Each structure stands twice: as C-alpha cells, then as structure tokens.
Length: 335
Image (cartoon, rainbow, N blue to C red; front, top):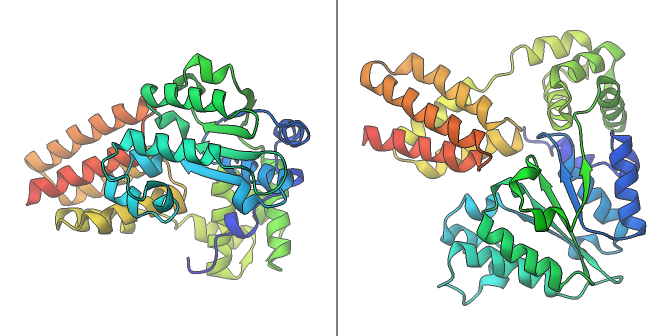
C-alpha cells in the first residue's frame, strides 16, 4: 500500500475515539495530569488514544509527547538500537551499556528534560507487557523521581504483567473492543474525509470483518478502496474475501531459508506492525505455508518450533522476538 496509511492520516482526536469511557478518562487526564495505565486487546486504540491526549494536552506535542516502544529495545540488537535516530542522541558515547541499561538511560533522559511548552510532558511506554521485572523496578524509580514534570502513560495488553508498585502509581483505563456501530462511525468519518463513494452495507461489512479491532477495520477499508475505488458491500466482500498473507509469508520463509534475515524480519515487521496481524495469525500462516513446502523431519521440526513459539507468545512476551527466532532456526536448518 503506497499511499499513507489511513490509521496515520486520520489519527483521531480525543472526541473521535470510539469508546466513550476512554474518552472521558483521557479528557480528565488533560485537565488534571496523572499517570495512566491503558490496557486492552491489540488494535483497540490504546496508542492512538495517548497520541490524541498528547495533541490535546501540549502546545508542542512533537517534543512534549515522548514515545518509547518496548519492542524497539527488547526485540532488536544493540547496534540497531544505537543506530535508531530516535535514540542516537541519548546513546552517543554509551557503547558499553547493556540493552537493559540502554532503555533505562533513554527513559531517564526523556523524563528528565524540561517540557518545551507548559508545565509537564508525557512519556508513553508502549507494549509494556514485554518489560522485564528488573526494568520495571528501574521504571518505578524514574516515575517517583520525575513525577512533578512528567506524566507517564503505560499501554499494555496484559496489565497483570506489571509489578504492583507501577500499577498503584497509575489510574487504570480499560479499553474494550469497539462495537460494530462504533466502528461504522469511525469508518464513515474517514471515507467521507477521503471523498470515497460508499454505502452503509459496505461499512457494516468491514466493521463485522474487523470484529472490534479499530486498526483492522481502517486498514481493511483502505485496502478495499485502493483496489476498487469505492467501499460497498460487493467491493468489500470481493476484496476482503481475497485478502491473505500467504504470499508474503512464503517470501518471508524464502528469505529466512536463504539466510537473508534482514529481509525476513522486515516482512515480519510489516505483517505485525503495518498490517496489524497478531503473532498467532502470522504463526498460523507460517504453518499453512510450511505444510505445503516441507515434509518428514523438516515439517516435524517446524511444528515443534511453532509449538514453542506459541507457548512463549501466550506468556505475554514479544511476538516479534519469538517469530524472529523461528525464522532464524528455519534458516539455520537449511544452511
């Protein structure tokens, strides 16, 4: 999809968030800054809600809303972290830091800087279910030290993975899956802004297809429009009934088997981040492709690796890390 993603181009304001309870809590956090813990399933708008909060609360959100995605650290090598332009200035001359110390240093530096405008800034820690306990203790200390000038917002699918001292320092905001009516409202706003022809049945079909996932609904609508130039029941059915990841997964496995892990991981990132698939969905597609190309011991090994990855992902750790490990193991077996 060459055009900008609608999830970015039509990022919601606080008033446009589909969940009324979440809108109310986030608006209160604008009027009276406090630490927040947003939790709920993938794709329901946790990160989008925090960004909307940042735009509402800060005159200069580009500087006073700091986003730190845990997967950017624990799912990457030290070299990749150091070369990331978002973190390079923090880590210049810090080549001997461990990965844990890197994220601690970035978090502490981000929290310690004075806000560019206003009296406080907001630090978002995203995908916090991947945070190890030792880092959580360091996070607790940073929250205590900089609470006067920094609002901390933590987003996670699994709040029970966080230690009690962190949970107790945050007001919890649960985000549920959106209803079909809420998704239809979101989609209607976007297609009208894009000046796209649509009908109500098309919006309803996409909303049902997304099953409560706001991100999935928006991306499905954009996919339909990019193929058919309109969003109707017929075009949505024809497009989404044909949407699948088998070709992309096949190319990803080809790259892994050839030892091109950078390309393989890039495709994996596209599936997990840009296209919004869950780790379980990507794993299922890997198995589907694998059953067509492997047999005997190689197929048995794939199933064993898939079982290990499925177990690890169910523990709440990074889908990207564990699926990347599976790709590396598949490449090793063909080397």
